[in-house]
Image (tube, rainbow, N blue to C red; front, side, top):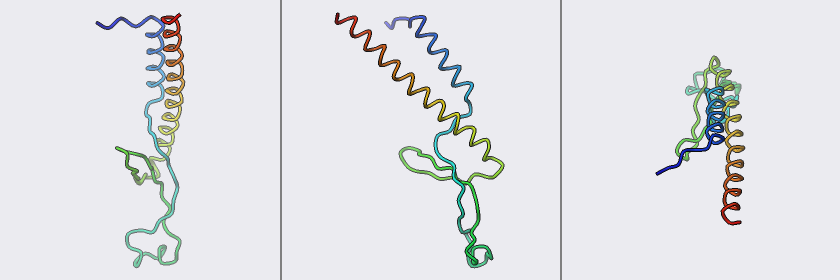
Length: 113
């Protein structure tokens, strides 16, 4: 039978859930502005001259593999916000993990001593 979490534990969960809701949408990865040749370099004047085509690329890991996706210019700001939200939420996770370890250590010390 699982015991009911203490009020402070429930309050911590609620604060974390609220922080996650406030930071939606989230994404993890990186956004880069690159210049690449197109798929028809022989027919394209820009590629023939060496200028290439500027574009945005979103790079992320999925199932352990590195993935890259083209991002239309109109979606760049939204993805930037999601990436920042993801970094903020990840920092919050790190803080929660450290606090959880401290609570475990205190509980272990109380049982021991």
